[in-house]
Image 1 (cartoon, helix red, strand yellow):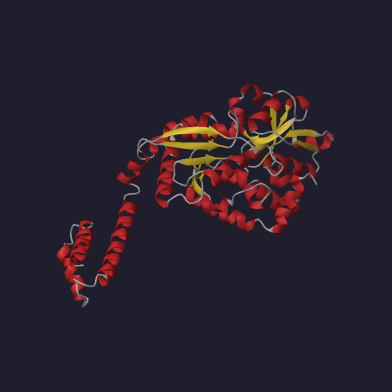
Image 2 (cartoon, one colour):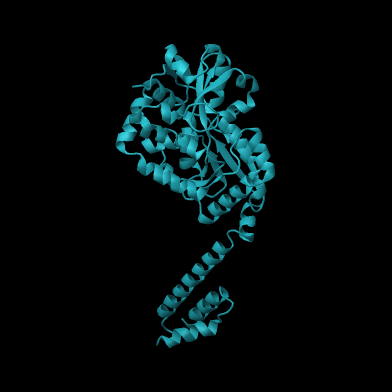
Length: 379
């Protein structure tokens, strides 16, 4: 038994160079035990010592999280960003602008790649992120603009709670507008209401702002018909360009890559003060629908968030958030972002996004959710 106790003492001493095996044995004897016959008190002492060593190691790792340890974590690795839409639309445009620059600001300079996973207005990509992606900080998502609204109202097929995701950042808030083909002859919102002409909108899912806002406008007296089933903004814009639909409610960044389409459409009404002289949505929507509009237009407030699965370690989350804000302040990134009409100069930090999401979820009362669902169904 003495040999076993001595070997155990030597093993634990090897874990910490400042403690000698003989010191541990003396500690054992000080507890009133026979070091040569009773090993159990020594085991208790060693377990306490091991716990202290482990806690100390955790502290060291946490301290290294934003220094050399961070560089070692990402060095030589690939950061994959899953985009919830097809190439060519506004969300994909945002993702490409971000991924071209983000890697330069992450310690260790990982390779950043994009994977498009379109379907259900970004929901497919978020479900994948939550169900199948390890929360190790090596896979992020840019699902789109409206996916978190779907999560808050808990529509069928949703496998996530948006409050639980890991938020990295957003380029900033945006302004959306109704763009109508000039060929319709409608050039002002009042003209649209007075004409009685039904304007056909291409839309993503029923609960997205691309469908909800046209339905809100229809309830306010502007005749609109929503055509669902388009899997991406790019497909809607193509349909708009080809005359398959008359209008779209979208941001301007998708038009940045389609100069020919930009010449064919006219903005009629907007969510924010981007286009001089255009009416604002909250001024033309019925008073009883203002709370629904606020929930639907959270898509503009949040912009296009970059998120990760729930449970990414705090160290990696902090690294990615810091890198995102540093990127957003970089002149090369800002020049690239301006070329595709992304917001510049007011990025939203990941911690603030997480707080905003919690507040949004709290404000979405059952009555507001029920009204949104009715409007989404065109009722």
